[in-house]
Length: 245
Image (cartoon, rainbow, N blue to C red; front, side, top):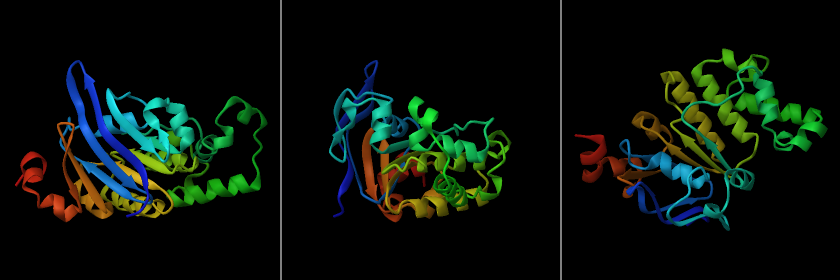
């Protein structure tokens, strides 16, 4: 078994008495691409919210490497190496693709970094390499607001990759994309898992099959099933509660 990068034990969070996540155990290995699926209200996004510090758990632990994330706040978790992409792309629409990637460079992400930041050939080269990886090499001088929805999704992933996270959390990354964009996104995610771990929430089962190595199924805040895509698709509990006959 590979080393664990993320270890969630007994995780619970309640909102006005309703348990959105209920005693969940969830483990992700280093360099693993994990898909999390389940019906609406299963606790998928809430799980990511707790890992990244947006929501504090009522009980349980969240270990990233040797850090207890539940005791940290969002920016500390980001600096520790956890990146989060939300459902809707969040990019600086008045800035170019190049500028969006540049502003995400770690040494420019605070006041002192911005004051003393100097663009070197090395940094420019890294930005161009990143743009190539996210299929935006020819759009470097294009303002982000002019990109398609799918291209904005790729740009936000690129902005996160500029920070070199060890764990990347993606919430429905192909929502609103064309079939070709979904294929390219699958290619991208399969590439970037080398050297980092990814947790991907997705409802598009065709896309999940393109990328899934292991799938976790949540239902009512609890673990319903876990295994390969074939295994979870054949599980009667998953068919009954989520996939349908």
